[in-house]
Image: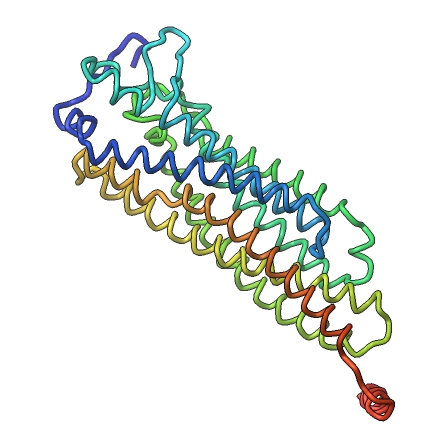
Length: 346
């Protein structure tokens, strides 16, 4: 297909663009996207403050939020702003199309090459969240196995593992679009080029298994950290007690977020596979509404920063309650000696 070829929207596709329901769904997408960006900024700001969660874990969470932000910025561009091709300036995005370009049905399709940065950013945001989940899981494994040495490394595990996972994510995106000339025409920049769909579907299956593995591993680590914290709570070495408490809180936070990401990845994988399998049986309006309302990543990018804010607030309140209990706790000398005797008997 030459760059001078033109693809015009069919009657069924024009019905989709003229649908008020479809237009309302697009504006709903924008509300979700802008809400998520606000929550992402608040969550990053909160993570940058001093917290009982260790530095490397907070670094992973920040990188994961930046992946969310990358996806959401591309998603907003997809829904609103203009895309300028090298050879023309007629390619505009969905809401702009609906409002100003419906009388030009041959201007409603895009060359896949003109959409590559938006499409790559959408994919990189999705896959980046999965790879950062892997980095957090590896960090938890190391922090549990080397409970004394690992915290001394401070932020270096976060720097090294984040850089490695970012490199893996970049390589993965390149492989997904490997050898695709991007000469096809697509109705929206969010739609995958036909020649790359197979590799993307293969990665979705791998991502689902990765998320299941993360969930299982973090469940085991959470149990081990509970046992370690219970043992350390009986010691008189305050540094060890604090370290075990910090490790447990970090693991609890990551477990909670991993469960959320697992559910999001599962829904995203299932929906995407079903959509790609049955999209040819749907009318353009049905397919457009399905993508606009059930594409799960924008909801995930809204939920994850909200969950981070809730988790950090819960940990902070729990910590303050424990401190207040310690301050108000009184015991007699006999009770104190009995407690010491129980510790020595264990």
